[in-house]
Image (cartoon, rainbow, N blue to C red):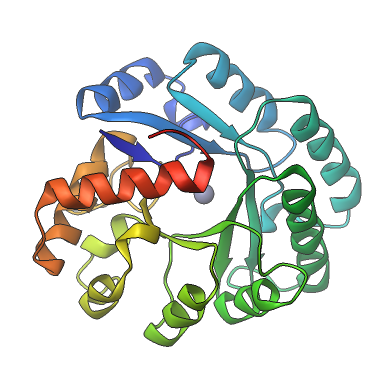
Length: 257
Ligand SMILES: [Zn+2]
């Protein structure tokens, strides 16, 4: 049994064949799909998918850093309302993205910290997106206020030093996806240093498609491809990677996987 801990199957890229995509995931053994929200507009799509696939899909509610702009307070207010009303398993995706645009840098930091406080008060883990901002995100997580928030650094792209900093925090998990199959992707050294008890697998569909499907739309059925690469580099049996990462996902989301 596999878990896709980060997949945006509610997005319009899957409007034509969403049912088939979920069926393919299930027949590949990917039994649960965690869907992280993006912005206010994606909420109805995400809710629809949770209703259509009960027991398979679990939702995370949050405001993505790339959606933080001059309207962020109003938008985050709506998202917080949804988070408190629904039965979500995490706050996400949240974080910092200084790759595309730094116009709203300070607002991104404010929105991130606000949502981490929601994690503390609701007892939910955080799904963290940190792009060109791993040091900044770690610094926030290392602060006294947030060092006990359970979280995952999704699509981890940091250095060995950053991995060590993350592992020094007791509740931080690492999300590994298709980038580990790219020629110039995540270094094998990083894959070898991962603590599997705090490593979870994710596709980030429709993005970051693993080799040999790179260039095409990603989907949750590709989780075992990512796991195979991990098993190969670490010289561990695939079944071991499966058990460890599924149990880690269970601890991260408070589920009995
Ligand atoms: Zn994402």
